[in-house]
Image 1: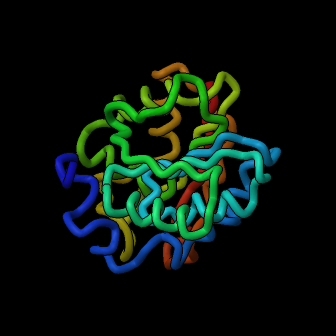
Image 2: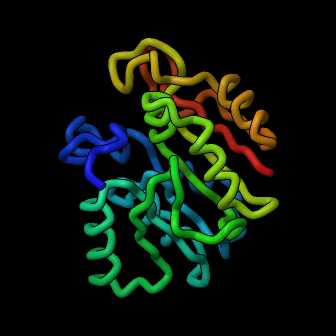
Length: 203
């Protein structure tokens, strides 16, 4: 699969030198999603699977956690972690979110994307990815997106690929999805204020 989409650099997520886990608290993000504990959960664009592993720790033993990424070496690393720790309810999966991920329709309770969504704007695949997210979630499921605010900042992607929360709300509305909640001040403390927003949609 390699680097055909342009989202993932050739040597994976590590090229930027600063993984999200160094400045975003995945546990805090997952805890803010108001989960019951037995969900089918997906860390979409999971990279090294940091958020998926946090979800396994937070959720009950009967929950199911998918880690999905287009970058095969990341998924191989997550498979190795699964096998070494004998985790039956973790499913590492290579998948392209702009095309088709190998999970059934309406089968996921919660999809979380941390610092991933702007990549789809960069390759002009926003409508495709929203349709695939919509296909996968259950009728009352949640799509939670944490991404960089649309502002000039020292760290993170170019402002040209950043979206505002309002732009995402309009995009998801065009696909028949409803805004459930918005936290417009989260993430890292930077000169401009807070670095991120967390927006949640449902069918």
